[in-house]
Image 1 (cartoon, rainbow, N blue to C red):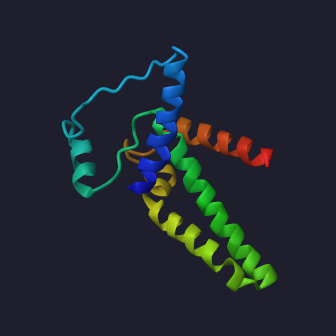
Image 2 (cartoon, rainbow, N blue to C red):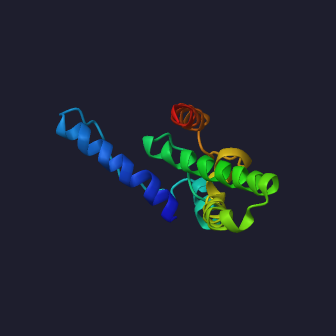
Length: 137
């Protein structure tokens, strides 16, 4: 849950503050009950995150999940290539911890088929942003 809060609320709040300072903010937040529809109620009672609504808050979450997954995979490959496990242990531990905590995000991106899964548009946009960011470095 800390990943969802940290990756969505803080960058979004900074962007909203910048846009509001420039007079361009159009952010709206409507409080709605998430347990009115039976499907939503079942997912809520099962403890599943609800990603079915398209929101700009969902763009940073898959980016962070993909970055952590790729960091773990790259680190494991480096350990097998160079044998420097002791040097990379801390980085692998942190990336592994983030990957384990990102399981609900991976599930919403790939494994789920219900209406609560992450929208394909949000996944595509976040992967494009990640690709642009990673190609810059």
